[in-house]
Length: 578
Image 1 (cartoon, rainbow, N blue to C red):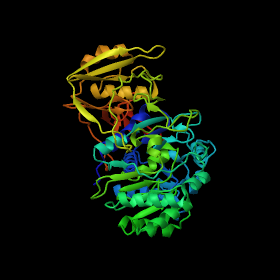
Image 2: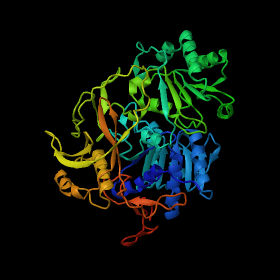
Image 3: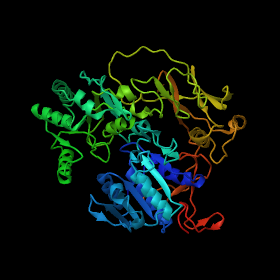
Image 4: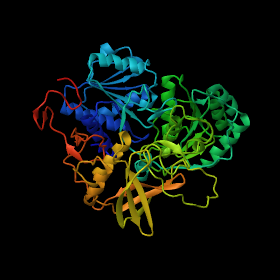
């Protein structure tokens, strides 16, 4: 029987918690290789075993993902009433209760699909912001059939190049982030493969390449990068660094560039094949299978190995494609985070300057629309409200979070830029104090100071804020006072602080030029053992219905199907038909 990891259980619980207090379309953010397919399958199984009348549609745009998600569903629940609607897979099972579909095949088929209660969109970051796209028209068609339709997006990168965060902006389809599993935490916990980086000597010069729609102009980029001498030097470095590594991916700047890279690998004695969007299905499947068996050491591609490509053994990634897209950067590097036998880590060779351009992948956040671009932006992200602010700012202008005083350090001599942020450091907590922090013209926050020997570290909890900052504050409070209502004001929080459980240790890590509190360890844990937990057998858990509480809050068992604390009900917890 498959066992869900703690963060996968939390992701499922967060969905129930969200719909108990919200009416929007939430996002669930799980890093590449974090098991989104299993989360979807376990969630769907639980819903249908509790409420058998529900109709669920899982939509994506990649044939491999359709097949992968369907296979995960059947592997978890062999009797699942699941079908596929995809021209690429040769199936049109439109009436299946659980329908895995390709948007290209189904976008004109809302009437044929009929009444749907819940739509899960995999790789949600690929939905364009335009309201007239295939996804939007299709969802509008389903909503006309069932106005109570609910939509959940799943992605590893909750942002787009052209419009910033997926849940922000005038035409945003999604309304909130219900749950996010940080990639750094999953790596530290051993669920994902660590990433390491070395600075190659060969650099791709894109200083004269223009920008269009937020990224480098494709034709000009390929012309600037696809130089014989540069390709030969880069391939030589890849071979040198990869001598003890078995499975290599090279992300290239164009079709011809990828072909030239593959030819140079062959000239230097390395087996390498290319895959493109127009590679015939049979040929592509055969190449990928041979790559996974180790018969092909390297794959060179342009744009088609970033989504739905699952090769756990990949232990070297060569970035030969400069991009201004933070999402594309994270997707490329994420191909190396899967675990595999004998694999200690994945080496990222960044010839393209993407790490310098975007920063470590676990700290990436895109610029919001209208913000200036170009060059290496001296920015940082507020850990409380996720606003992107100037690196030199000592206080967040949006939520009032105060950054710790700058620590002066001697710069390391190595030229390597980390593709992951530094690992956290755990410190014993000897005492905790609480105070009010007032910001001129802004809302107050709760300042929490931890005494750790000769040093103290502070964090700011946005009790009186709204949206994401309030959600994080509520989560923070619930961890320390299970079952207790979250205060509405900072003064209330201070008055009740004596009842809060104190962490035995905190983790701290560098954040730009500062150090931030990144985690808390409770001994013993203040959260009681849940009455039950999400499992592969459909035993699902909801969250206490408190506005803004995220998945790590106190969990409580959901009522049995068709009942509630007040007696029988006619509509499901997912808001479906009576």
